[in-house]
Image 1 (tube, rainbow, N blue to C red):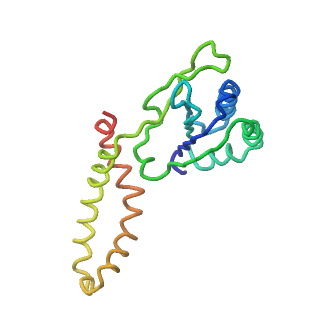
Image 2 (cartoon, one colour; image 1 turned 90 degrees about the vertical axis):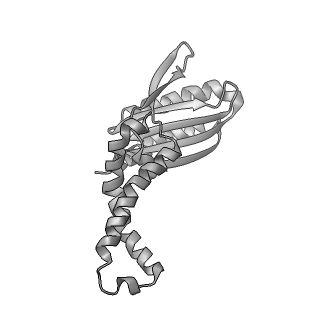
Image 3 (cartoon, helix red, strand yellow; image 1 turned 180 degrees about the vertical axis):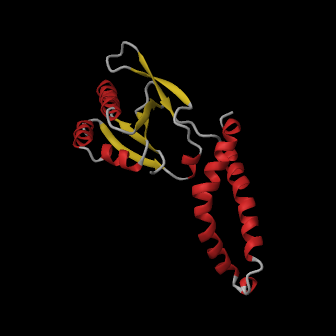
Length: 195
C-alpha cells in the first residue's frame, strides 16, 4: 500500500467570476469527499481581492487518488471551471515533504458557497526547511557512516574511483533512507517538527 499523497494546486481565477469560482471549488471538495481514501482538502485565496487561489487535497494512496483524478465526475467538474480558471499549476507531494506531513496539523475557515458562513477544513502544514534539513541529516549521517564502515574491508573498495563508490553507495542508501530511516526519524522527531 502506498503512502498518502498530497496534491497542491495554484489556480489563477477570473476576478470577475469569484462567486462562481467559490461555488465551483466547494462543489469539487464535496464530490471528492465521497471517494474512498479521501483524507481532506482546503483552499485559500492570497487576499480578499486576489485572483490567485491555492488548493490542497490528500488521498490515502496512489490508487485512491487515481480513482478520483480519472473519474468522469471530476472530468465534468473540471470542465465547468474552464469558464473562469485562467491557468493552473499542480504539484504532487510524495517526496521529502511527504515525510513531514501529518494529515491534520491545522485548520482554515473557508466561506460557504452561499456566503452565509464558513466551513472549517483540515490542512497539511510542514515544518520549516531548516528542521527538515536537520531531520534528514540525523538519519543520513549514521546510515552513511555505517555503510562506509561496512564496505571499507571489502577487497578493492578503496581502489574504485570515487564516482563509482558514490554511485554504489547512493544506490544502496537511497531506498534505505526513503523507506525506513526517514519515516522513522520523522516519527521520532514529530513533537519537535510540529513546534
